[in-house]
Image (cartoon, rainbow, N blue to C red; front, side, top):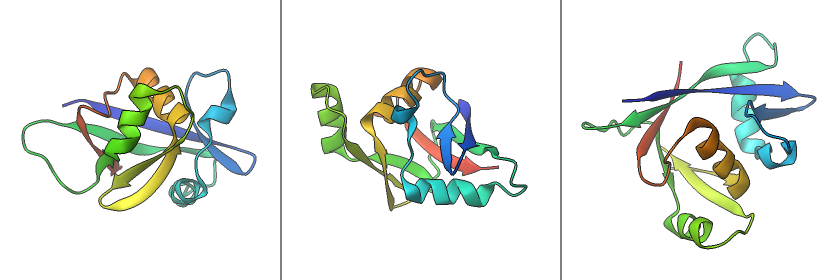
Length: 122
C-alpha cells in the first residue's frame, strides 16, 4: 500500500497543488476544493500538507474513495482536450481540469484510472 502526501500552497487568494510545473494556470482548483483546503489551514500559514492519497489493495475501505466518471476517463485517453473532469469522493461530486489530472498523475506516478485510492486527512 502506497501513501502519497499532497501539499497545497496559497498564493494570493488561491490554493495550488505544490507540483513541479511551468504553467500555473493548469494547476487551478475549483472554488469548492479551495474552500475545503482553506478550512484545513488552521494556522493561516498558507501551506496545507495534511491530505494523503492511500492506494487501496486487498481490503478496501469505502470512506474517502476517489472515483472518476468513466466518460471523462475515456475522453481523457482518446482526446487532447482540456476539459472539466468529474470526480467523486465518498459520493460527493467535485471537478478538476484534465490538465491538473495529468499533472497529478505525472508528478506522483499515480494510476488514478486503474488503481483505487482513498483520500485521508491527517
